[in-house]
Length: 250
Ligand SMILES: Nc1ncnc2c1ncn2[C@@H]1O[C@H](COP(=O)(O)OP(=O)(O)OP(=O)(O)O)[C@@H](O)[C@H]1O
Ligand SMILES: [Mg+2]
Image (cartoon, rainbow, N blue to C red; front, side):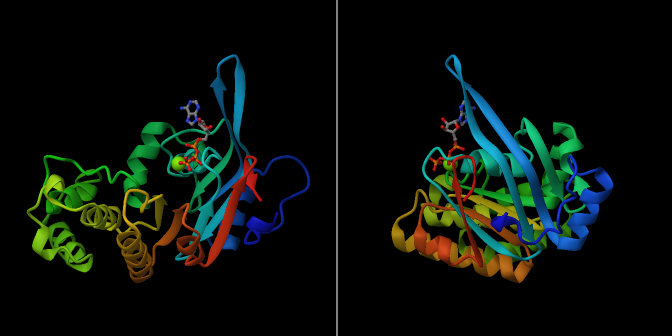
């Protein structure tokens, strides 16, 4: 399939075995990969087939954008790639790890070190200031010491918020909140950032700035970026652009 050029050819018979799938990931250099993801939701007395066999891969450090009509399944896909939701069937690899074989608890334990997420609605903790929100990324995966504090300080500075570190989310503008969310997502040096319409609540200029920042910091941190967006100009800034249509990449 055209969106899946980076994988080695699949064996012709049946689904991939564990050994060959792991080998494919290593051969392809994919840091995150899915094969044949399917997801349906009950909808009244019918079934809504949202994802109908999604093959996806992103290489280490690569930037990929995903567009698609509202309701085409972009958030569903990102949540499954993040291990926040389960597909009905299909494979998911985080590096060489077969994530589809892990329990939700195991996924949660690994997620915080493997990937970072940025959402349209920021999802900052309202009671914590900007610095503590960034540090929360580290608290979720282990102990917080001087090294983590220094990194949180450096990241806040990098996203232009050194002077706002003691502000609560309610005391920050939308663009500033999203910058905090970007810093938090990068806290644990993840291999991948998954961003679901990160500029959806921002005005055009602020949105452009946030996308510019996101691309810059992901490049600096050597994190791959998967960007879901409705904005064609933002989508074009990614090295590779995909369109989700009828449950698959067109
Ligand atoms: N938990 C759920 N239960 C039932 N249906 C759901 C559920 N979550 C999503 N859907 C349906 O699945 C489809 C895909 O939803 P999804 O949120 O992935 O779309 P999207 O591409 O992210 O859209 P948007 O661009 O508006 O954010 C929609 O038709 C939605 O109604
Ligand atoms: Mg969505």
